[in-house]
Length: 202
Image (cartoon, rainbow, N blue to C red):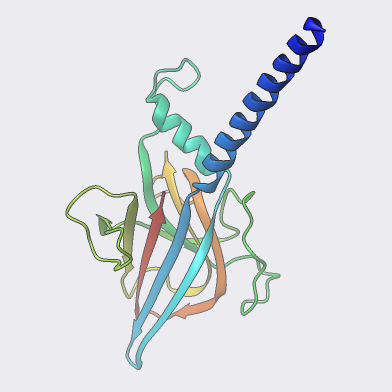
């Protein structure tokens, strides 16, 4: 009888521990990165505005791990040079329907056809009250803004991504991809400017 009671108590403790662990992981999984793009094309006839949510790709976690390690491992002694560093735009695959490109996936690691990349002109912490206004203190929301001038990123843009780590503004394809989004084509002429704000909520 005593043996059965002992086994019952042991089983109850194991079940409770299992439940607690699953609850912890369940709660943790609720807190995920969220990315949004605010795009504005300014041209002689006015302005075009678009808004998209995007996919945080799997390789983003590798950059986070490298930044947290801060060069203290033998495998990665120098660590990454940057966190999120540049915004890149591309024209997509030549087989795509430009007005209906395939959806972005978490497995993406590079643009299909990178056109242009540029460092951010502004990086701001954002208020958590939903206003989207710059904050005067550190928050868990960041805005990364890039402005492509008339002569930059000229073409039919159907994909956007952020890169960090060893990303170089001058070297297309360099660095670790953080997020990715495909969009119906934005045809940017050499008479228009393109402003992109990427908002990251952590």
